[in-house]
Image 1: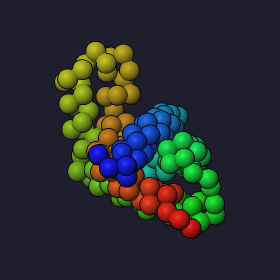
Image 2: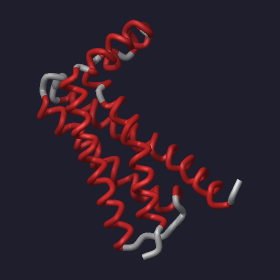
Image 3: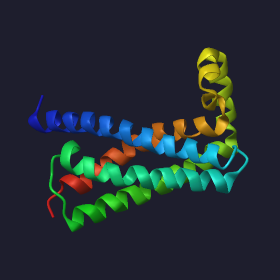
Image 4: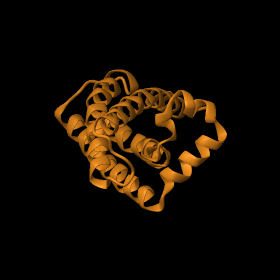
Length: 159
């Protein structure tokens, strides 16, 4: 294995760990705000706003940890702008796909699947059976690998 490939693998592993943490922060803020404002899957603007709010909160933590630990680099204005640009593109993809999957009824399908596969978990944590809570899952499957490539490019390139 070449050194560059090994470095990329290590970066992706750290990116994955940081991404899981950022995703958990994002989801917790999103689900909490949906609960707080009593939103459901039919409240398109409401869930879009709560989703974007969760994204912003996770973005701030993600930037600091990505610089210091994931890519082990120092910050600069150019890197900050590149990170912000990649996340602006990422946020747009998130919101576009969230509403696309909402229109397709993906949240309903996922909630039925979760209720069928792990009813005990839904009994223990009812929020997991709600369509709007599960709606981000297919979004993450698509945007996480794309975001890694963008963030890696902007944080590791020479200014």
